[in-house]
Length: 615
Image (cartoon, rainbow, N blue to C red):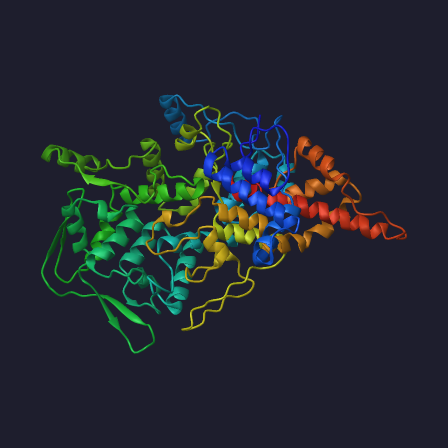
């Protein structure tokens, strides 16, 4: 079986031009082939000193690409991504998926290997790569419940709250500068409030209610920044962010009547400046007085007495018994975060439309708890699955950790990324294989910094006031969307201007590939990694052990026999010199050769699709 991440070639090649040409011409035959040839030609000229001084940057860039080859290893005989076990239901999620597969005529993938599961769940749950020791320990563990125990352990680690706070900061538009303009003091208060909610596993209905009904100072009452994190503070603008955040729906796509009714609920919010720099008070304004009646999309009539806050009525309606829109949007977003694909996709495009089929349907719908408002615009791939997840989420008292635990322990989540059917698109769409998706920009930045043995460093360019980012903070703790870097921008970090999940761009681009291949920053991280000396010295002359440790460090798995064979074929024995005197500098040269080979291998693996994608 061929690797899911590589081409069909049964041989391996090395070199920047060969790799880039081989990966892209199949997809973008004309333009990409020309681009690759031009890049290869410039690289060749640069390497031979034929590029003039006016092309100094290109010379340096492409010389590096030419002289530091990237190896692509193809394993045709076996797959490191599968365990060999067939899909077997491990709960209701899997039963509903199997029923859907049978209906669609799709066969599910096999269960993924232990190494793949380890790496996948680490990245999905805590946004962190496992260490080589953690990978080795988990793979060697023979207990039958080790996967469930690992999920529990990760949900209790400090990184969980940090990483999922980052996710919620995308949704809630946590950003100091234009166009959100929360300002640094408010960002710090707001992000810490979100972190505390995640850390304490605040029930999701209480989390939503706290945001929707918040009033007070944006510095002293952090949740009130929900109403400040939009440039449009009209009832229409606020209604848009509320429906997007808690219904996963774009209000601008609703029928005009329903849109106007929802906007009424936010018509009595007022803003007031204070004497403190950038501080603002958000409060409920009871004027004008009088009862407010709002016709909700499910035909519920909200009657809000004079002097009562309509926002509380909206929160009551969202979480009312028998209504699942709120829960469905939440579980769909969580599913998207774990799979890179929503059951309803795009996850921000629940299309609610009023179903006009008479009084009887309305009355019966209300009686049996069925909503007469239907998602006709963007239906779920498995309606029974999203309803079941919503029911379980409500039953658990809106416990996000329990929801993640349930999904991560399912066979659906633990499938291999290698489809069992020829129709790869259908397998991905209906979750008959784990959907491969690129690592988040922040996660990738932290992974590369981990290899270098240093913490990433960020600086605020906002002058009023300067935001201090501790040097030891990881990128997944960078909660202010205004503090960025060229790396994060290149790899698609969310701009946080709209609150859409799709603002985060997880597509692979040529600029990303060129950066990983040619950047001196990446080269320095690989060259100066503190792990290399220990790996070489502890191997005691065993080349295979060195290769094993490098694979565990970068890919969290052991290499296949085919991969080891091809590495040794290219580099020969990779080992530290033995003890004894240094005759003619041979000992020093042997260490230099071993370091060079190891750096080449680490760089090759970092530039592989297997590394930059979660699979």
